[in-house]
Image 1 (cartoon, rainbow, N blue to C red):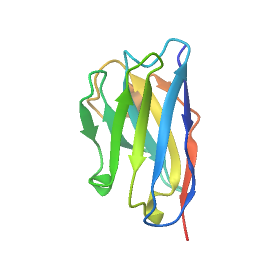
Image 2 (spheres, helix red, strand yellow):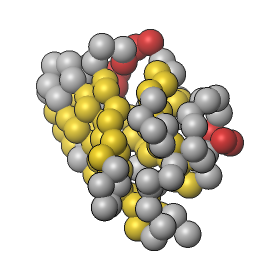
Image 3 (cartoon, rainbow, N blue to C red):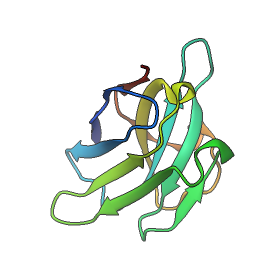
Image 4 (cartoon, rainbow, N blue to C red):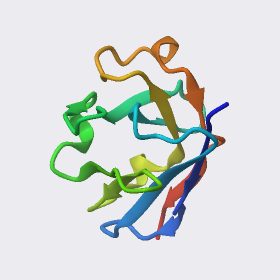
Length: 125
């Protein structure tokens, strides 16, 4: 059973940066595409970015283009990162990583097989 763990969330001022990490216990992430999702208060969860097993990136929403990047380190313990720059208050949300095999494709949550518990990101002065 693949278990995903997000880390790196916290409180940051507008314009600041955070880097989220997604790691796995159990089988490992090397064979999966990994997506980042977020859920803001009172809103539905939305897909943000995805990176395939081979490193191809899919951007699902325009509001993070030029500010957020996704990357992966396919070393011994594969880790996927979400680098978030120039953060805005509207980026405040719980951020989740999720795994699917092996390409990104549709942003539909139903395509993702494994989910982490989420990490809170709050952008506020």
